[in-house]
Length: 174
Image (cartoon, rainbow, N blue to C red; front, side, top):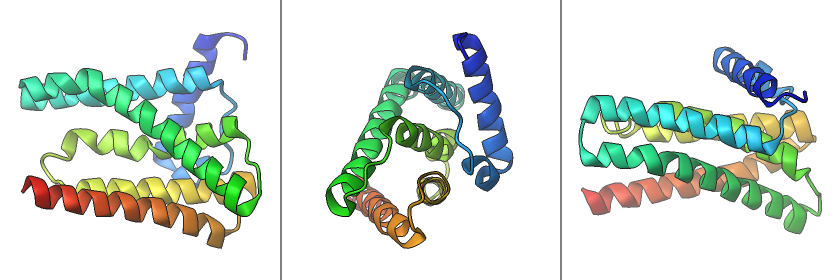
């Protein structure tokens, strides 16, 4: 697709398909430029932040209008780098970075969608983490030919680290 609007429209259609049937959608990742993935991801995070502002109506909520898109883009890049590095260093398998970035962008969608509700029900963040992990495992197996065991290893470690961080954070913050 040469027209960015057409590609972004196709991505939004893919996201809708992902939300209605994630396992089926993850069997075939969209072919998108990373810039368009970043734009749609930032827009989704911005919309989630607007929902937070509407419900909370305080300065912290307004802060997320700026912070959440940046955080999500950073986490996507970090997650892509960790998974890529794991396969490159420990498995000696090189995964295409652009396709891996597409997968991590899509896999983080449950986190973005759940974000407005985490303050109401904090354990929902754990459900989102597991959902993101399942999406990542499915995408690795279906699109990269990674064994289920190998995908479970790396994603399990990432999700376990996130859950551990969440628990420690909840204890410290009360």
